[in-house]
Length: 425
Image (cartoon, helix red, strand yellow):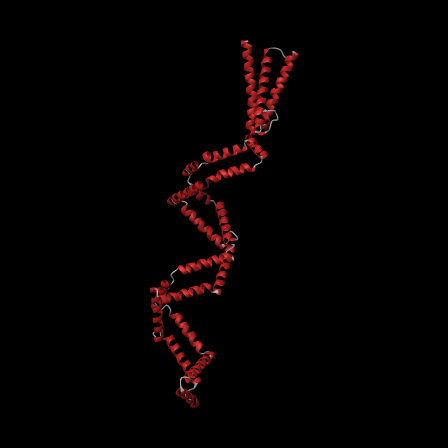
C-alpha cells in the first residue's frame, strides 16, 4: 500500500479536479465552497504532478524535449555518487579516528571470553582449530617440506655447538660410572664374538700374513720361520687358540672387575675425549663435524626422517578428523581451563584488551583504504537497473510520501489562495 500511496494521491487530486470542474461547469455544483474546493484540487494536481516528475526523474529518463537531459539522475551521476559515498565512509562514518574512538570504549577481551564460555561457540572454535591443523599437516610429508625441514636442520646443526655439551655429558657419565652397563654389554658381545669360528679363522689368516711378511726381511728370519714350522715350534692354529683364550680371559676379567686396567684405560681415554670436546680441540671438533655431516647426508637417516614425518601426518589427521578424539578432547579441556582461568583475571584481561586494540588499530591504519575499495567495488559491480532497484527498495516508501505531501500541501495552498481571493477580491 505504501508503494502506491503516491499514485493514489495523484489519482485523487486529478479525479477531484475533474469532478468539481465538470460539476461547476454543468451547474450541478454551485456556490463559493465548490470553487474553493476545485481550486484546492487544481493546486493538489499540480503539486502531485510536480513531485511525481521529480521522483521519477531520479530513477528514469522522462522523454520530454530539453527537460529529459536532466532526468535519470541516479544513473547519470552514479560515478559521482559512488565517490561521494566512498568519501563519506572513509572520512566520516568509518574514519580511522572514529574507529579508534569506538575501540577505546569497548571491553573486547571480556567479550571474547564471554563468547567462548558458551559451549556452542567453544565447539565452533574447536572446529576451526581442527580445520587449521588439517591444513597444516596435509602437505607435511611432501618433498618440498621434507627438503625445507632437512635444510633447516642442517643449518641448525652447523650453527649448534654440540661439542661442549657432549663433552660435559660424557665426563659426567664416566665419573658417575653411568657408562658401565654399556661397557659390560660390549665386553659380553666381545666374548661371544671370540667364540665364533670365523674369528678363529680370521686370526689364523692374520698370523700367516705376519709370518709371511716376517720371512721377507732377510735370510736368517726366513730360515727361522721355516725351521719353526718344520719342527712344530711355530703352530699357527695353536697360536690362534692361545690368542683367543687370552683375549677371552681379558674380556671376562674386565667384565667382572670394574677396576680392571682395561676399563681404567678406557675411562681415561673417554675423559680425555670429553676434555677435548669441552675445550674445543680442533682435531676433535673436525671429527664431530664430519660425523654430523655424514649423518645429515645418510640416506637411511633421511628415509627414517621422511617416515617419521609421514607417521606424524597420519597421526594428526586421524586425531583431528573428528571432534571427539583423544587429542581434540585434550585440546578442548585445556581450552576450557584456560578460559575459566583467564576469563576472570582482570590483569590479564586488561593486557589482552590493550593488545587487541593496538592490533586492530594497526590493521585499521594499514588497511583503512580497503574500506573505500570495498564500497567502490560493491557499487560498481551493480548494473544500472540493480542500482536503481536497490535504492528504490530502501527509500521508495519515503519518496511516495513526498508525492503525497506534494498533493496535500499543494491542495492546502490552493484552498488558502482561493479563500484569500474570495475575502479580498
